[in-house]
Amino acid sequence: TYIGDVNNNGWITGTARYAALPGVEWRGFVRKDGVWTDVGDFGGSRTDARAVNNLGVAVGNSRNTQNNNVAFKWDPDTESLTQLLPSFDLCRSIAYDINDAGIVVGFGSCSSTSRALYWLPGDSRGRKLNDLLPPDSGWSNLTYAQAVDNCGVVIGQGIRQDRPGYFSAFM
Image (cartoon, rainbow, N blue to C red; front, top):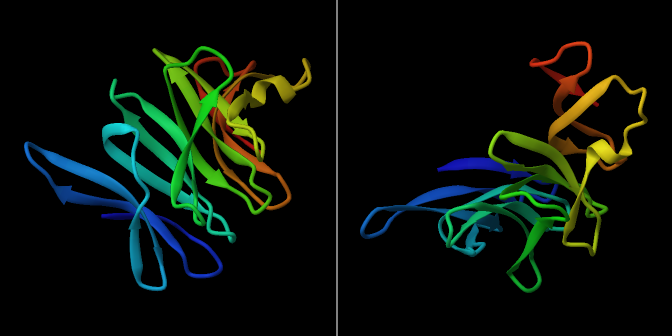
């Protein structure tokens, strides 16, 4: 079992290992007031609940039947998952964080190409953070977004034009 996040109300997200035949299954959960709730899945063998905002909305990733990770948002009122998809051709996506405004950040990838993504409230199609950069920013690719605060500031990693092949932090 590992813990992904805790909000100001004491809600916890994480992933727990359940014994399942024929193998082991990892399940994402939200814990509220001592009650553990399985967030569900998209048909694969693993779900990770990575973050929860102060409204109880959780995000993470679940493997689908093709064994690709798909980012999700979990609604505490309906206890259901919504797929968060990239708006362009990527094989997998992971949501790492959500702020209280409902902005979600993470990444999408296919093969060795990885892109930092963000999802706006009410929109299940992700957008590339790279598209927000001015041409003279010095960045060649923002590869993943790790966290977003309640002011909308995003942190993560990427590759700068002056350091090709090396990852650098961004904010």
